[in-house]
Length: 498
Image 1 (tube, rainbow, N blue to C red):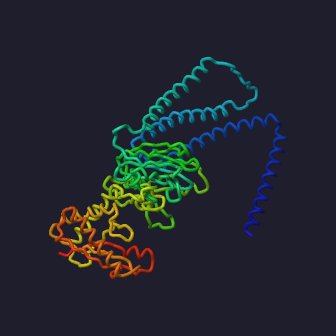
Image 2 (cartoon, rainbow, N blue to C red):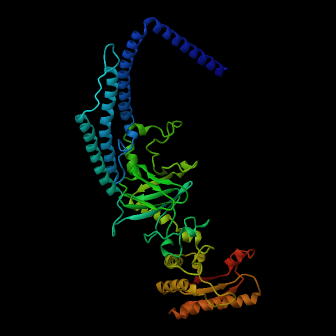
Image 3 (tube, rainbow, N blue to C red):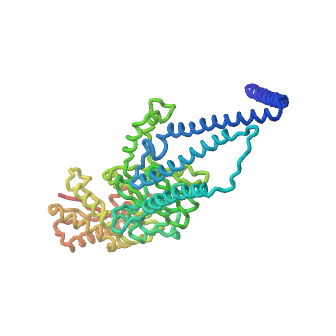
């Protein structure tokens, strides 16, 4: 019913417009062509002046009303070192072009009024004026020269790469439909190499794990962090189509081009908290973030820096958004400690791992620290179960008591621990699964425990502090009902006796 009423109203309005047009034509016929032309010219002139006032007034009103939501104004001053230089370039360009914009529109509409048709007036044609041409050419040339020179200076400053020996950190941003994969260096501060030919379902970045620099690289979750006041160099790569690495508050914007790595260097100057505190000074940002929850968080409380893609890269373009947290160096360091090496946590020991049969330097140091912490806790603990620790990283040749070459790293950690606590003595226990003859298993476990004791004694640990013992399959950790559980029961442990 409502649709029918709306349709009838539209039809009636059209009828009225048609009838008004007919009345206008009839009035023009009565008044005569000259009078009609005179009236049209007069009203066109006045309407032009009125439109000029409303148009320019609307331009200035909208700029003033929305000043606090535009980059470069109000609370949105640049949050990077180089950003203020770009804001200055835009502001100077705005002032110069704004003057031209206002003057040309005033002239346009004023001339439409002043030189409207009047009876008896003739147009004067000026085919050429040297003085006017000189001014018309010279002024824009001077203005353009100023803008270009300032722009080149800004470009050379903003786009300069880091210098040798300069203090900075580097991250890598890889774009694809539809998301960003960010890669950070680990403790070595260096991002490892990559090769697109090594890309697999598990290794989507094509990281070359033969390069030791990749071993401690990590890939953060949806939120990523950067420290305030630290120069950051971002490697920018695209895997499929054209994308754009865009951090608006930092005035960072660089295309991600397939097959053509790019970069951008910037230094954040405001933490996320600093920016929020700037926003809270303005009434626009003290409104509810969600109008449906008037007592909920304010807009300034929900603000976050974000990484966006500034190219229309496909239907899922919107999902390229990532949240960026700018924090103090202490907060950043704490966040980094929570991150896990992609290689060690996702690739180590799997089919795509080129180092499956090697013990890596990074693992040696990590294992040594972990082992030292564990033995210290075991010595200090008063609980009997805490006194038994498993030697996680030792192995034997199949069906033999001969230690594998890689077992020395774990056993060397035990030597270090025994030397750190010279008053302790330990029982070294060998265990097997329940597959095969029980007596043979008992003999094998005893021999393996003896091999461990011999290794320790060869490195200076007194035999009086060591007690080898084999248990065969008599003390399983879990039931022997799967290959995984069988592997868990085949183990070597040591128990602190005193």
